[in-house]
Picture 1 (tube, rainbow, N blue to C red):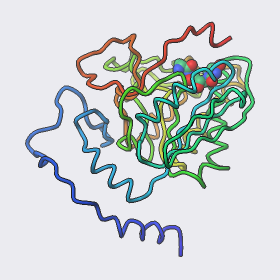
Picture 2 (tube, rainbow, N blue to C red):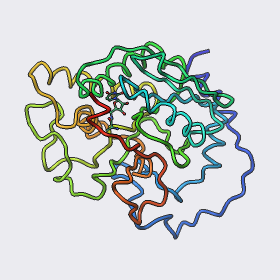
Picture 3 (cartoon, rainbow, N blue to C red):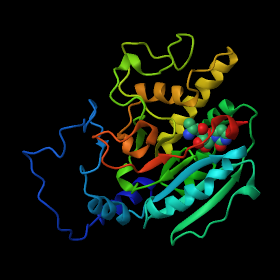
Length: 302
Ligand code: 48C
């Protein structure tokens, strides 16, 4: 049976269990303080705007497999245990989850007892001298592993920074063909203020009169095909710039923003999904789900 027909068979049996919940009110939007839909009809995910029970039932029926990738290169291995411990409490609990930990220091990665249906795979990868290269080369490695391995093992990839901790539920509401996350530091700013790459010579260049949102480099994902396209674009763009001795202002994040400008994400995560307490707790932020861990950049990067 062909792949397509098999997939359709799976959907044919997609019968949801009985779930009781309030009747959606066509006259009353869930929230009026924040934008809930992009101009290209991609949902922007905020607390109180979805029913997780329905989403969990839909994704459980499809026995969805989720991979979450983190890079713990050089001293960043110190962040892995907090990352995994908090993910076990808050990240897609009850679903099939594989943690892919990319590292140059395999023996430094703690082997943590994981819940049913969850596993950790540690992938040895080369390191780079400059922290800028470490962060940028993630795109190349995500691209290569997507093609060589992830395509056979998981249905969705969630690609995140490791110097983070989960502090509230991050569930299947984030999943979509291609998703990005609004950067907490840029939220609500005019597009001219976004820290896009502004040099026309760079492949990451975005002119002042373009741009939808400013997406954070620390949280993106989607199905394997879309993540492959994203990481391949970003890596190739970085290599093109590198050949001209050009490096975009915010490294892989600059190239990610260029990609999302011309390949619109099908879902956008609110800053609930990537927050840093240095930005305080504004009224729109009803839940802080994934938080930056305090660190001394100089100490940890050299
Ligand atoms: O794993 C490393 N090691 C390094 O020396 C520098 C970066 N990284 C990876 O790149 C980590 O996964 C970091 O989370 C990511 C870059 N992101 C940050 O350093 C802050 N979250 C901005």
